[in-house]
Length: 219
Image (tube, rainbow, N blue to C red; front, side, top):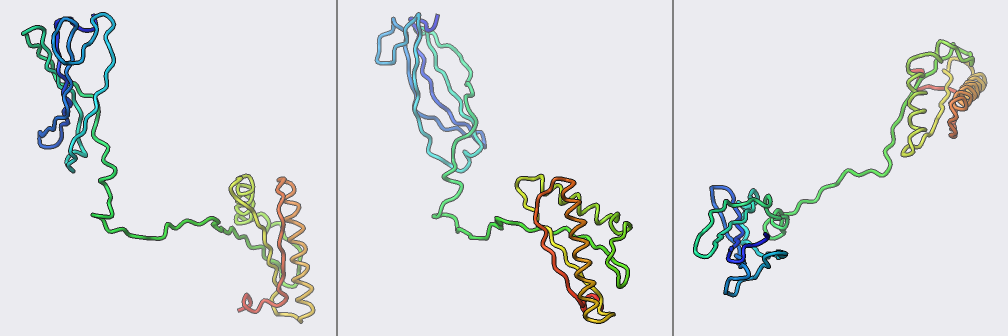
């Protein structure tokens, strides 16, 4: 049985919130087929669907609240005792959280950067007035870390890889000697890194330059 033919029920929405307070909304009344009245009639066998629409005057304390339905059920003159039934948590009060009428807007930079540049450096030291790459330099920890970082960045579709080489010669010889020495160091280093990147199938350009007499580094 979906609804007793001799029953009536009044359903009242009740919003309960802090301090044991509650606010009631518009009540809706329903009746069985044998009851006379102006309530909404629910067929005995097939039951029925109905919609309840109601509003509560908002108060800030209602942000933490619970919605219940309260039933006043009767069969003829006999009242049925039914507990309140919880149907939802809280209210939608987004519009009350911030308002230009009650809140002073503040503007601040969001810190967004479309491109964030990061650098991973490694130093290769040369014997004085020589341009040969020493294995002890190529096996250093900072070189291993550099290769690992380049590989990770290249394999990440959100990152781009730029490789730069800066070669120097100390100004302890003549300008002509130092120019030739710095250029050869840049050439040897570029060739080495090209081979290393190729081994790992990393396709990226290498930007190389040299400084013939590194007075800043000499100091």
